[in-house]
Amino acid sequence: MGPVLRMSEGDTIYDYCWFPKMSSLDPDTCFIASSSRDNPVHIWDAFYGDLRATFRPYNHLDELTAAHSLCFSPDGCQLYCGFDKMVRIFHTDRPGRDCEERPTTVKKQGQGGIVSCMAFSPCQSLYACGSYSRTVGVYSCEDGELLALLPPRHQGGITHLLFAPDGHHLYTGARKDKEILCWDLRNPGRVLFSVHRSVNTNQRIYFDLDPTGRYLLSGDTDGMMSVWDTLTAPPDGQEEVLQPHLQFRAHRDCANGMSVHPFMPLLVTSSMASFTSWVSGVQPQN
View 1 (tube, rainbow, N blue to C red):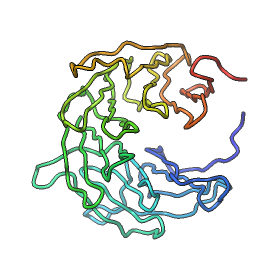
View 2: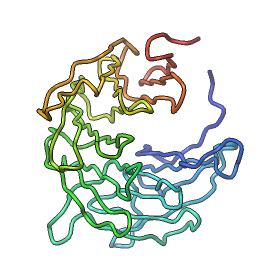
View 3: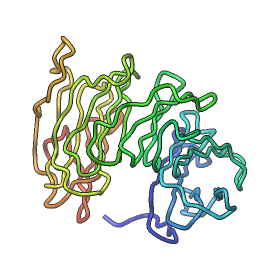
């Protein structure tokens, strides 16, 4: 298969995200945001590959600075951008440099480090930020107030985090760290369980949940894909390492990208060398 579109950024791409309200029936909603080193945030047309808009974040020295992570708000009206000890929020209908600034550290208190990833709760007005300082902060959407700062349980900087559909559980993973942790946000700081995968790289290795939130899936640096059944976690709340429900080889090298279809039994995985589609996580499709 060959690409139908190519959008060329100026340098190494740090992050990208799709508009959450995208519908192929409405071309105006089909766009993607991207951030790259020493460049502003760009909005690209997903039908024609044209540049639609540019958001220019500036630091305290009035110098253009690149966003390390991107995440649209659930309604798509705002674009959250992660920086060193800072989240900047742009309104998607107002390109340019105007933005709201929300420091994650105030008077040396709060969450330090570069905000490397972000995610929004599916049922509450809050969002989570992971940082390379190995911490995860939970914030209010209304004013950016820090609601909880999870302890640094990971060995490396946070590279990916994901809310469960019920909004009560938050999954986090880190660079050069074999654990994916499941946090109980009803009791911040408490880990319900963990799962292990091989992560011997600083690459961002994604993980995902099936639409019900029951199955957790992730690749690893050995090219293996693992599936865990979260319902096998001990009901007494004692932290435990869950064993894989299913494992299979997806690639010959690091399987760092993966995504579960929102309603069909399909899984897409990617590595540095290949891109594969699977049915029910078992059989490849031609």
